[in-house]
Length: 312
Image (cartoon, rainbow, N blue to C red; front, side):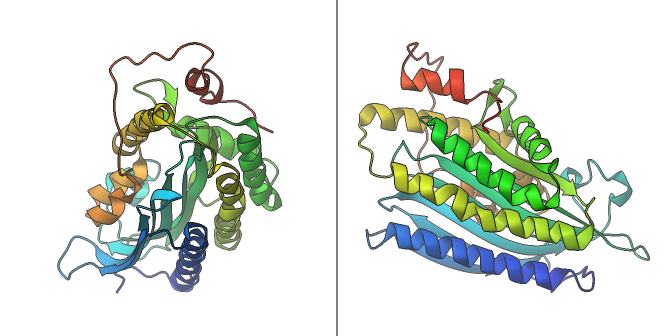
């Protein structure tokens, strides 16, 4: 399958990622239950002759009682040349063949009091002919509430910190800051959510420890998110809260299409568009110069929660 296959690295990472996707979506299915949601597992493969070669599995739940749309994709693709979005910090690899694999998810809950969540873990291996392959990792997770709760933000960040702690106490504050800087709608000077952790082009621990860190982050996701879902899923809400949720989802769409490097990488490299855009919410709205009343929960989201700050 692969045009570029660094010996001894690809298969262990692939096996872990496929298993991670299955564990996460099985857990989501247990929460959703038998409420009539549409659950789909879509295995795909790039056709011969396309820009990229490879395959993947897209798993999605739509129309559920808990999750309006929850998508989790695994992909393993290779190509003859790294796209520009992947070589911004590695100009020496411009034009090199590569293999990229990862799991990426975005869950859009139905109840506005349950936050949207994103998680991604990935590895890229690349190298010119005759050179030793270079492998690096990326990923993280972040939380995007519509109505803010201090205890939810604290819990999420504690789990993120604990996942990174075995690999160096300096990593959480570094990756937390990186997350705040990355998940920002710079055209609005506004954070996307309350952050979490984010890392990219990461190779300083070497392959073995880098892969171990990737697994620790991926394994921590359910611990970080599911308790929040269970705490908020049955909170009563009305048209006001639903309208605000859709309005804030519009900001999520803006970030994914304008700023997200993963989206750009997939589209620039000829990836599978349907899977790349599984992060889009089923519904979103925009409002011209919306102004929420001071002191309301809606106003407090932007004035208090959508500000880079220390949560733990």
